[in-house]
Length: 382
Image 1 (cartoon, one colour):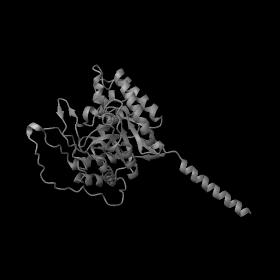
Image 2: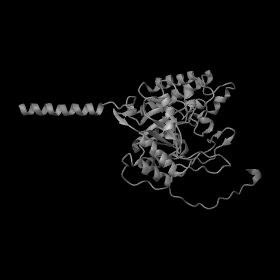
Image 3: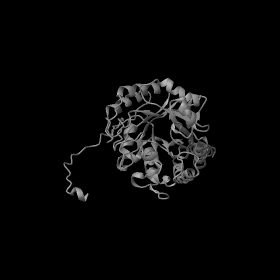
Image 4: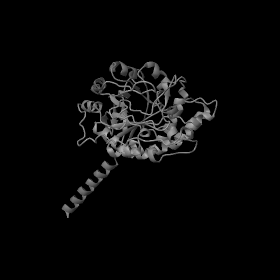
């Protein structure tokens, strides 16, 4: 009888321990004292790569994500183009190649965390930086400011989008560890702190108090002056070949303590119509990446795969210099998702700091020759 009682107590204790373990809250936060992120209470560093689901057909999403995972990445970063999902006011599209929730599920299934950049402005060499053209129906609207018409549209859009994203937050069992507010706002002329404050309150109201919200700006004090705001963790972006310590010193101006973060470490560069394809040295990219990881910094490689500007989604810089259909970016994975020398060089750097996943890397996408395509329409009938 005594033995049975003891066994019952042991079984109950084991069940209780299992229940506590299973229900332990997932957390992701900033440890300012030790200059790092904390994931479930333990120090964490992300090595991430940018992938834009809007530039890759859905059928290839899993292939690209697997290749990123096999390179040693533990996270991805992606933008959400507002105009891609609300092409006309009050008309939303989250299906097919726009199925954002499916993309996030795939990332989590593969084993990748997510750094989300929902804008409302995203830049990204994307048409109007992701802002819908129908906003311009208000002739005197001032974009990316506290302008009442603009704020009303942003509030409505975020009221649709952010509740969809909340279940995907890491704290809620999903893959999203951090969320960016706006994008490189320190490079914009307005410098409207009330606008950033409004966005911060808006994001908090929909996503809750626990998610890490951050900003990204160029690695210069001048950019951070208008891009950083109390309550948003300030990060910087810069490319290879420069002085890494000097670049991070700009972040330390805004954030004396906390994790070092390069939110856009440029593995290549964008192209313009009429110019040669941009190419950035693999050796220089690998060297700078190694320097940042040796410092314990968190790094997101922009881009890890660029993809394609389908339709008329390509953006343009000023003075008018449009991007072409290709957004290859000289990235580690080519526009077609092919493995490159840069991919393997980056993988070799990462394995110096993290254990790489076991198993085969998915191969480059097969290519086919379809022959000539003839156009039998007369010019005047086209």
